[in-house]
Image 1 (cartoon, rainbow, N blue to C red):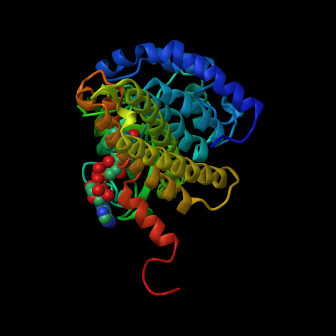
Image 2: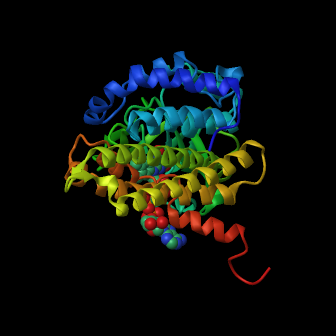
Image 3: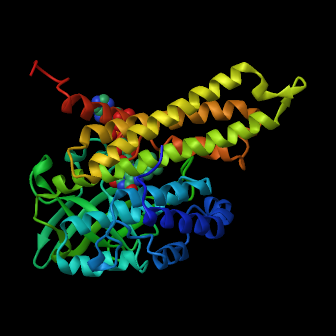
Length: 383
Ligand SMILES: Cc1cc2nc3c(=O)[nH]c(=O)nc-3n(C[C@H](O)[C@H](O)[C@H](O)COP(=O)(O)OP(=O)(O)OC[C@H]3O[C@@H](n4cnc5c(N)ncnc54)[C@H](O)[C@@H]3O)c2cc1C
């Protein structure tokens, strides 16, 4: 399935493809080993306008819709690492988008502009050791003290956590439950903030961290929107985040399919290529059918989202189906490569490991099923 016909989208796609070939693909192995993408990547992406495609033109962004993010992501995924686009998206689409959505003009001038220009890197801090899926029970507190908030608590699994200059952070400013939550921008050089990089089994190029706040003083003007109105803001950001993961999943699956098809033609066993065996023709036919189905659902969800229609249910379906599909595809494509798929340098092996995070991040598959059930009258009494 193709993106909507547009010369501008095509131009973005072509220049992004060249950039990925020149600046990203040759370096992926090194970044995977180092556990992070370099700051220079953000600067270079900013130079081409790729860091803020959906951010406001008023603050240096491109002011485009999600189809542009889709085209950019699809090309970035051709680098063969999920960690690279995750690092870029955690900055632009996750952390900075919330500031754009609810922040004051001053906050946008300071952080959204710096984000678009690649001068600052952002991270989004919502998950905690005792509150992942259940965001409404988060415990990190921010207590007002004069012109500041004093933040105490911790955040877990935060993408860009150790390389970020600011963390868009969900905190508790009021009573229990979702009504006591606010969002505040915490500068990474704030006193009382300690960051620890986590060792993961996949998405190695994306740095993931645990953050500890010990009487961390943050200016009150860094609050995004109204106090205790942050839950709505965090939830509104999830739609874009889930679409990002859906597009990554579809692109990753296609990459693995192409690799498996090539391998299936080239690899000889018992005097013939693997794809001469009908079992592999059928298995890869199933893989391709599922990729097409996931792309079609994802594009339909994007279409609704871009048109401003109610898209929560479709986005949840797209995220659920495409990320589970990517994991299934990884297993099939790894199987046809035999022992090779278990080697460190194998593309399918790397993407297999990486795909494990897709059914977890930005809301698990169980969370997606819960939303689909709630928004389609599957819960409680008959409507
Ligand atoms: C690589 C990676 C990057 C991440 N980046 C970020 C980031 O940048 N910022 C951020 O804030 N977070 C980030 N996360 C965290 C992610 O959003 C959480 O891991 C996710 O929301 C799940 O929370 P949890 O891990 O605490 O699992 P839990 O919430 O403890 O859930 C554990 C299991 O129980 C299931 N479960 C929970 N509640 C229910 C229920 N009511 N019914 C049925 N099943 C249920 C879940 O689906 C899951 O299978 C990242 C995670 C990963 C792996």
